[in-house]
Length: 401
Image (cartoon, rainbow, N blue to C red):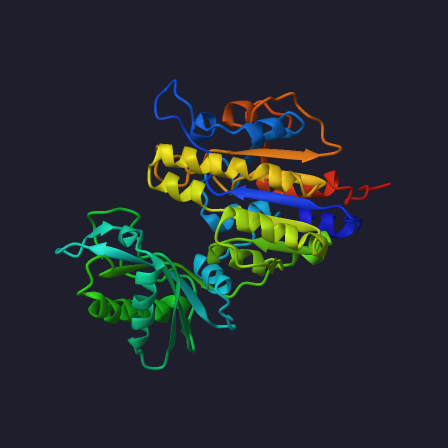
């Protein structure tokens, strides 16, 4: 029996509201042995005040020592075992922008990148090219033609775009072409099984034609392909938790993941204040709200400690507005850690805070890694966070006689 078998059997209904605030890449590291992490350095009076009536700990997104991508990180938060439910990033991005994937499609999340004169990557994100510059380039790539294959190219945001391949005999098990490094060329698409050989060949032809179309661009003169994925099927929040769930996100990928687990995407906010307003506007329609804040992750990936501190403080400023709505359960966490020291996602457990009327406050007076490591939640696997949320919301019955 897995956790979903239990929640299906035990969940009950009431009028409680659960809010999960996810600061992407929240956890960090100090830049010197005796220095603070980004969360410790940030001025977070609202989170610290909330901590005094909450219980906190550290969540492990997948397993100890495993640095997760955003997909597995969020699946864990949503209560889906990320080792059992594996979703490629391409499917998340495609779903997030409203593309209706069909059975047999293969979706690919792509990045524009900058190539030097030797064909090596000098910038993996093309200088984080703004959307108004990248979208016309993505549309230009619709000129790629591959016999026997329908090719769909859709802009996403900044350096990101989606390619969907549709045709007979395509599998989704193809290696990323992003080497996760600069000074080296993009990798060749490589199939991991016989069913995906054709996909790798099609992807290589797409790259060949696309780079010819992009060769005169200064920033985005190349591309990498990530997260090859077929259309997944996951049980929904309504089925496993009995919750009417809403997602409030800016970036398409997170909307896509939320949709795949049966959440409704509400509003079209572009700022954190707008996201909170959307939550307020839809407060009476849903039982569960997932609000995603991206910029604690992107600043960490950029290696910018001070910017991540600033974004953490921006996140903190929204807490009173959320509290004013009166959620019965309020969770603050991240999908993984992104220390600016490492400039990447890491394996470090993620600071997590849970407030409810029936939690056991653990006496902590601040919210950050040093406090969380000895908090009342202890260190736990993220996939159990939703059962904790249901229990604290009075939405879980007793197990056994």
